[in-house]
Image (cartoon, rainbow, N blue to C red):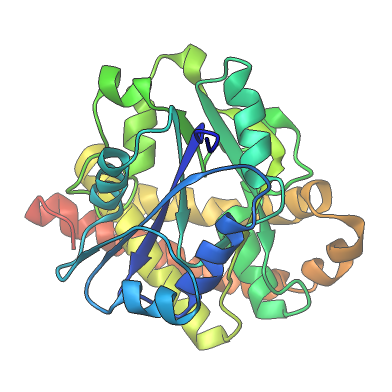
Length: 290
């Protein structure tokens, strides 16, 4: 009899991008049995895409777009393993990603967070993107400095505290973890490494950061009632921390090259801050997300 998987992995796709193949393959390549399900929304044909690549995994598809919280919830409902992890279609699970999570869950940790690696460590734009988005999730950071995201959960938490908010365009994981008792703060485990595919073209990076900022600002404005100027200042303040976190959190072989990307980082942070201010302003006036 096959060993029953202890960890479920929900791979979340949007419009069945070709990158979904590599994401699923990275999960299938883990060295322990896993319960895997792909949740794809917004159209495309994820089932055919994966089948053409020789990958046989359960796929749940929706023609309409699901926000990430809704996609997470579909995956939770479709699986039964006692612990649940999630992987976006623009990410890859490194070797040992699942085993390191399960080691801590089996030892009693209800939540386990992950660190992030750069997909293109010798591309200045990608380095800037990596630092803007993940400066507090670099694998070399001390636990007290790290942000706890990319979290896997004990399934019992969803039974006790509810599921993810399905109406939020972003921040659904932040909102869910805010419901948990402080003692359940995710364990920081740099051995759980996820590669994020970063943008390598400057114009696309700036546009992406503006969009991300706008969604974040909408969350801060609608949920926390923050004003646009405060939101702009809060996001742009991160420029003071980038170099420090890069020096502490990056491997020695990547550190010097990444520091050359700091001017691009500051430009991207300005775009993100501007987007956040616009998002906060819109949500304050309209009472809804942009």
